[in-house]
Image (cartoon, rainbow, N blue to C red):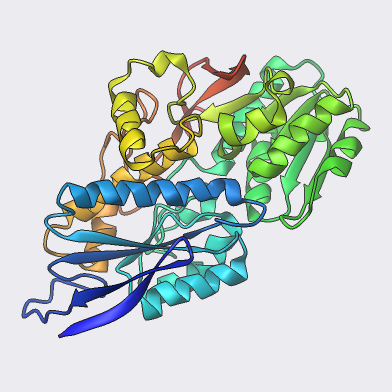
Amino acid sequence: MKTNRRLFIGGVSAAIVSRTSIAFGQKKYDAGVTDNEIKIGHCCPYSGPASAYGVIGKGIEGYWKMVNDQGGINGRKVTFITLDDGLNPAKTVEAVRQLVEQEKVFSTFNILGTPTNTAVHKYLNAKKVPQLFVATGASKWGDPQHFPWTMGYQPDYNTEGQIYAKHILANTKDAKIAILIQNDDFGKDYVDGFKKGLGGETARIAKIATYEVTDPTVESQIIQLKDTGANVFFNVGTPKFAAQAIRKAADIGWKPAQYMTNVSASVASVLKPAGFENAQGIITAAYLKDPTDKRWADDAEMKVWRDWMNKYMSGANQADANYVYAYGVSTLMREALKRCGDTLTRANLMKQAASFQKFRVPCLLPSITVSTSSTDFYPIQSVQLERFKGETWDLFGEVMSAEST
């Protein structure tokens, strides 16, 4: 029996496609899987103030095109359905319900944003639909005891915040710290970790200024932070606001030691718009190879990535590290699906996702690998600090993990 339905790519109606539904005697498949197809659901902000992250969804789409060209997953083509939620939790709820209840996807994958994932966290776990490798480092995504269907991917914000705080205490005399955060769990998670890293030195925080994701600018917040006399600035903003903060600090002559979160470390979408001259010396934590770093010019993994970009993301900005992220996290999802074999149940997918041991994801920094278990839902737990110099990032120091902080 043939059924017709409409696919949505990036929130835009695509072609009407035909699929063949087949009944199977063996119960090895859950919803979203046939002998020929695996349906994966995703949403991210293709529009709105966080639209710089939309390239992640486009990159993932390009990755699955490559997989399908290579024969799919154990002979099954991947249907990747991606919707625009504008980083608005209410829209995320609508999009995820559409993916689960109408499109009947096998799994969601790499939904972006802390508040947006939070909005569908309980729903997906109640439905027993995998919420895999979410694009947010909030510490809540590693709680298999209470949320066994949700797993993170990148290093968690709490640990990253601790690393920055300890580096500040070790390297800035009489540190007086000003912090800009998005007023949600994303910002608060970083601050919680940062305070842990400061230990008994939390009085060094002069002011925490907040902004809403719907605010047009953060210029007034930067003026307030400068007025505290702080000599350290911790910039916890998503790309648009992080870039605004860097530029405004320069415009008003504020020259603190600057630390910025990894999620806004893209040269193309943050540092170039902020002005390279304004970004010199900023420190962040990295776990991916940066495409603008000349040290990776002859790196085998980055050569493969560039070949993929040229073929499947033709015309895209290869200085944007978000495409490196999309390629890496999609590789991990591909491997989890591959390991399921013909037992494509949601429970088995989560089992495979929780069974990686020192798995090498392409374009992670050397010596950083993915390890998970039934009690460890934090795939990547290591980072290395880097400093912006010229027009690229420069790695320094040793690789650090949660344990080393």
